[in-house]
Structure formats: C-alpha cells, structure tokens
Image: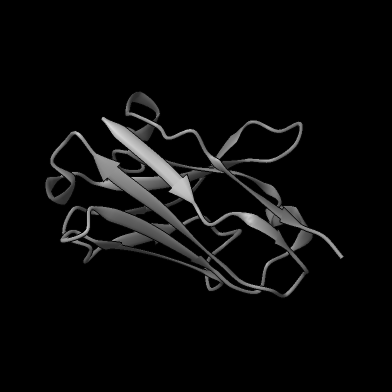
Length: 118
C-alpha cells in the first residue's frame, strides 16, 4: 500500500487549497478512504471519510460546509477541497485507508503540511 499526499502549502485565512492523495498497491475502488489532520501540539483529528463508491461522505463538525472530500476511482486518487480556511486548520494532513471507524488501523500516507497564516 502506498499513499502519497500533495497540494499542501501556505495560504491566508479565507483562502483555499485542494489536497490530493495518490493511491497504489491495493484496490482503491473498493476501499473506503479518510482524511485526518494533526495540528501543532495536538493529537490526530479525524476530518472526513468517503465510501468506496464516493456516494457517502461524512465530515467533522469543525470542517463541515467548508471542506469537500471526493475521489476519482479511475485515477486512484482521493481529494480534499478546503475552502474558507481558518488559522486553526493549520496541520499536517494525512490520507488513510478505511472509514471513520477503522482508519486508525489502516495505512496512512506521509502527510502534507497546510499552514494558514496572515
């Protein structure tokens, strides 16, 4: 299993970023996927999950209405569109195999850094 995140960077409050997670080494189209983040000095925080077909998505209250998770099974890629970014969204963002109940036992990528700063 290999998961490679990209798309992080530095952005001002109110800005947008789109993260990508390129997956290989497993059957992506039959695997639920999850985004997790870890802010400075904090533990991991579940952000969002999507089922294997892409028809069901769930979000943490802290990002609901601002973030959108999606996937392209033809490209083996998971996405996280982040809009209206806040200072508190600053974190390393990880993609992982599994849904909201079992992602902790899944495979994780190396993470991509998102910094929201004025």
